[in-house]
Amino acid sequence: MYKAKAYAASSATSPVAATSIARRDPTEDDVQIEILFCGICHSDLHQVRDEWSGMMPTVYPCVPGHEIVGRVTRVGAAVNKFKPGDLAAVGCMVDSDGTCPECKAGFEQFCPNFVLTYNFPDKHLGGVTYGGYSDSIVVKERFVLRVPGNLDLAGAAPLLCAGITTYSPMRHWGVSKGKKVGVVGLGGLGHMAVKFAHALGAHTVVFTTSASKKDDALRLGADEVVLSKDANEMGKHAGSFDFILDAVAAPHDINAYINLLARDGNITMVGAPAEPLAVGVFGLLFRRRSFSGSIIGGIAETQEMLDFCGKHTITSDVEVIPIQKVNEAYERLAKSDVKYRFSIDMASLKSE
Ligand code: NAP
Ligand code: ZN
Image 1: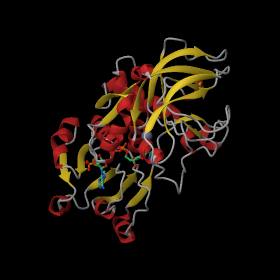
Image 2 (image 1 turned 30 degrees about the vertical axis):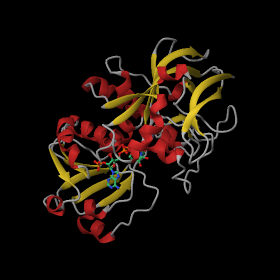
Image 3 (image 1 turned 135 degrees about the horizontal axis):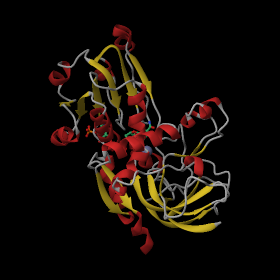
Image 4 (image 1 turned 30 degrees about the horizontal axis):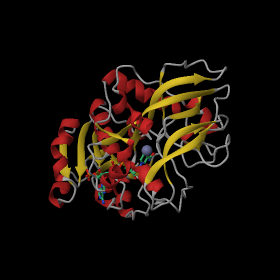
């Protein structure tokens, strides 16, 4: 066991602040990584403030962070895919049973025994797992990913959650050339969704509540932008979408989007507002539409997404911040004031 520097919240109302945490020494199948960048996901904010107390209550101290890139510093004797000095990445999961039908099918994200990167029981040290707002992490090799060498590392970090969470449902629902695809909410997830939908060749329409994001949406790859508060603009798209990805973090009217789906169209929620959304069933009955959800993606698919990003030179648009600015970043994230992901430069933790 060794001590690592980290930033943690000690309660739902306290700021995230410098602390020191225990990390395990690498076991034979572990990889130890010096963390270089960690993205700030809106889930970090939900979790730190215990907004998901009904589903996933927060255990304090809570060290968030599941968009991790860094460099390998040590490996266990049985590790063969990584060596010290390699670039490496870790996303939202650090373990799963590896034996259940979900794991065998490559869906570790649905394994009943998976372990999330933070705020999940830690079977090595007791307590809970601690995430990427830290100078190092130790993770089982099976959950460590390769980062294509051509990608900017600060911008690559958010691929580990915002990237896979949007890539996976788009692949599942067949987003491709000739399809009309909507993205609701131009935040961290939404802006990645736009990049992927565009790269996959779909006609991409962004729905935003922020008029100021219109130009950015087009620059990111959207073909059209709709101000979702404008009923007239919304109405023009009625019954026309093959697929809509909803990445909104707050309560909103989902029925307005269901009505935009064509026959057999699907709307998938990846946003995780704490409160239930009211779904009008009639909108689904007509045109046999479906409403579903999706959570991150499996490990093999995450590697596929990273390789896709390497091939198409896709990274997140990031605002790089020192860790000392994380509380300010949270305030801005709560107001949808980020273009389009904060990425923490972990070198800033050295001075703590
Ligand atoms: P984010 O950067 O804050 O983006 C959310 C966007 O939603 C905002 O930029 C804003 O876009 C829109 N929005 C915010 N409040 C709204 C409101 N009241 N009504 C309508 N639109 C609103 O957050 P994120 O990091 O992308 O995460 C989004 C959600 O996905 C969070 O709930 C997060 O926990 C969840 N999440 C889920 C998964 C998964 O596996 N399913 C993974 C990661 C994150 P506009 O300004 O364009 O309207
Ligand atoms: Zn996330």
